[in-house]
Length: 355
Image (tube, rainbow, N blue to C red; front, side):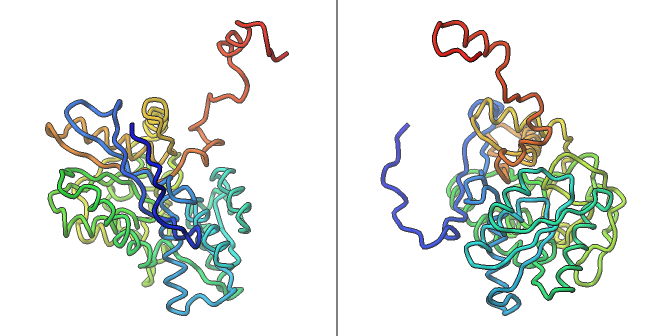
């Protein structure tokens, strides 16, 4: 390996200037021999996830339009990564932030947002994602706050068309890219990237994934929504699933563009156990640390790889880092204390032994 010592060739005026330009990393030990696989590692964003991109664009688009006034409070409903991204952006720009979040999402997410200065309001698990959405809307209407509306705003998919998609085009320029694999939370990532790939790399097949037990897109049942795109009811095909950050209990309006324009080629449902399994395998075999949603996308990519022609090149999105999953099933069986094997190693030499 050649170490890079020249730095980035620039100085940054703000942490917000470091968002984007995340690396596409080759998979060396897990990829089947007949294909080449890469992952786009969004954990390299300063807030640790792909949602840093949309958080910045939502705020800056609202500043440009005048919808967000200096010092005005921002409110949003989120499973966590968008909230962390918004907390970072609002801290850097001086906006108060209030987050609504279903009580079942990981404790680490809440603490990260609060550490960055946000207030986090929990909503009952029985009310699912639509409950946290309605609470955010209520708070915005009562207090005159700016409602970020990640599930509907055009600023969401736009930033991925402007940045994430362009990075993929640049990274694979002159080479093959046969498959792009992504799940969806709001739908902004896959929708924005699909716009670019359909225009400039039409040979690339776009693979969409969703939880097998919450297969709303696969069901073919239309989402009930208001004229502004707001969901008015939980989708009947939704069931609770362990892939935090993926698929709330409604099909977001941002994703609807992808569905209406046939912006994907294949839909592959994936299970929770496989998602956890491949997040762990990426850590153990590749040294790549991602969350359950990243494991889900990579598990989907492995299914695609199994059927792909010889020489195919596959890129999978890894939305975030594994550190915000410490209290989830991803870390089941990972103890803080020493195992019997570790204790035996400790005792195998005479010095520095714990009691």
